[in-house]
Every structure is written in C-alpha cells, then in structure tokens.
Length: 142
Image 1: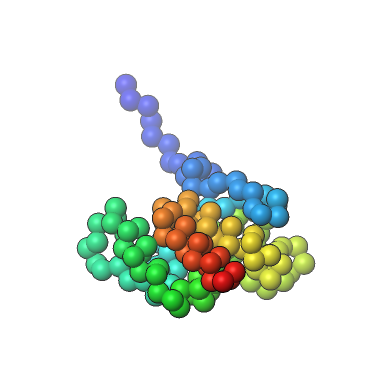
Image 2: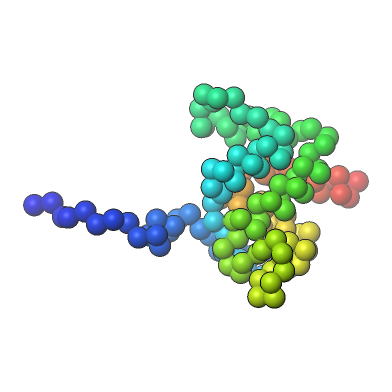
C-alpha cells in the first residue's frame, strides 16, 4: 500500500534553496536563490539577453560571453543593489530604513558584492558572477 501524499510545507520547499554565508566583514547572512522574475530583471539590468529557446545548460555560457562589455561595472552595481534586498533572507535588507532592518546603504561595498556573488552562485550563474566580480575589482583598482 502506498503512503498517502501530503502537501509539501513552505519550509520543506525552501530547504535547499537557501544558504548561510559569511561575507568580508565576517557578518553572516542567510540568502536564497533568485526567483525567475528577479533573475529576469538582473539579466535586463546587466543588458544581457537570452534568446528564446536557449537550452538552460547554455544560459550561463551566454551570460558569461556578454559580461565583457566595458559598461558592465555600472550595470553590475545596479544589479547588486536590486538583487541583495530580494535574496537576503536574514538579517533582512530593505530598500528604505525602518530601524529594525539593514539597508543596502548600510552594507560595505565588499559585503554587497559578496552577497550578490553568493546569490548568483546559488542561483546557477557561477562563472558569469566570477567574471563580473573579477572585472569589477580590476576596474576599481586600476
């Protein structure tokens, strides 16, 4: 006899979609994978386009190819500011200060980009993220 199916709880569903990370300042955050709408907006902010019908296993390579644009540094900052409040679970990061949460302005640049990179990695955009982070650091120093 088969076991009766029981609907998945929200906690069960979210398990495996979050990760605890430590950033440059040694602060610890819980992050989650990007939702499809957030990922779509990030691709738009970065100016990347994915042709309809592109196999999912080729999306990362296509995004990586497009991140070599010299304008990518500004786009990278905009994308990080957009993603971090939407994908950091704890402590909450909000767009407007409310006294009990952090804002993007509270974060150091290193922590902001660490969180953005970790979210991108968790969301499956690892190589593109590494390329963007490296390019950003080179442009910041050089």
